[in-house]
Length: 551
Picture 1 (tube, rainbow, N blue to C red):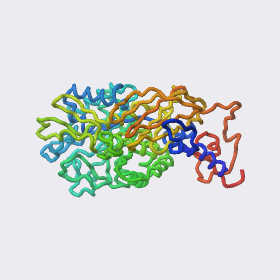
Picture 2 (picture 1 turned 180 degrees about the vertical axis):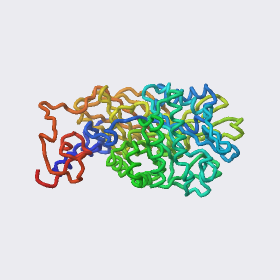
Picture 3 (picture 1 turned 60 degrees about the vertical axis):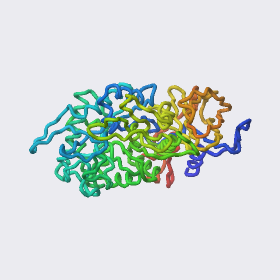
Picture 4 (picture 1 turned 90 degrees about the vertical axis):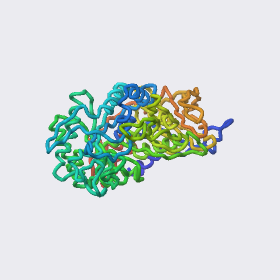
């Protein structure tokens, strides 16, 4: 059985090197990269179903939300049908620093909290955080029914911390939440979430109580942001279980608790393994950032073995890619990150840190100076710049490269395993296959997409491209012959192929529904009922049965 299983896995692998299928003018077959896509080889996580694309709203929503005009433009630009079509918003429940502190120098990251503390008395101020809430409401309306909201926290309120500061402990490597305030902090997160859902009608899918907790990044008096260290193991387990209790007491036990948004993939593995058994059960989804680490397949397997969904919940950077790519360089870097993260983790969602990281305003904001315009031919954080003086959002090639993915790979599609420079998704209901590939070379790159494992394939593919001279440009169609699409990717470009009339798996006549009453076998070698003998017939390459004894 082991030999058969391995053979099937090789045949159905997402990227298979096969002999060149075509040659012709302007196309070098022997130099082409071949990608084989199969409806039988899908992402392992969440049964391959994609949940969507998103961004956190802090801190940019806190900066632009004062203006209804800018807030609406942002919602349309990032969540609207004519924009990126994002559908996930990570909403920051601010802790709120000591009112006497003035050390955060950015104009966007001084996040308000919802409580006021006076001589031991705590009262809630529901007028707080208007700016971020204003943007959230407009984004929800722009995104429509696919919208997903996740609440997350960077720090508890200042009076719950050891340092008295929401930017972290005096020693950034030590916990900043007071030992006797875990329940209070959990109650705070639950109370805010309850108010948003029941008073303001904002549906919340998930909540995470920590953000990059096992680091030494966060320290008292930091000029940057709120942050809070939690040790892995007992401390992270404790806040997860307290949050589970608090959400249940508020009648919000259906809200998914996600954890733990570590900055590194490898740290995320260690942190989840270190959770108590009860905390692991309380976690409904693993959220990871990918600023560091490399063990994407290990984290994917950990999520599968633990029966958890998996999100890539935050990353961005000032990287560049391509050869003499100019303004495309930051966008090509982003394309590389999206493809590497999604194909490596098989994540069911991919979320950028913040779509706007820089602001232009001569007057500044709240007495602080804005960062100003960026050189969009060099690496920069975010995808756009908010110009408050001109009341406009300035878009970059990084924005348009992001849209090559977000506009066409949509929530509910099934993600297909792929490799190299390519991602793919299949919409079985509408018979549509979407392929996105980037080219970081200064010359054309020949590609062959083998689609022969689909039961039916359309005869042409629609091309959408972003390059130095194009933004989501409709480039017409290209023929598909014999289930094979051959093309040349333009230099320093990102191209989306949309193929209609596609049918997935072949429906066999006389199909036998396999169950344990009809097929028996010895115990699987993993000693796990998730790998019983039915897995040999389920049509998925990531599950298998491998009995050791007679059967």
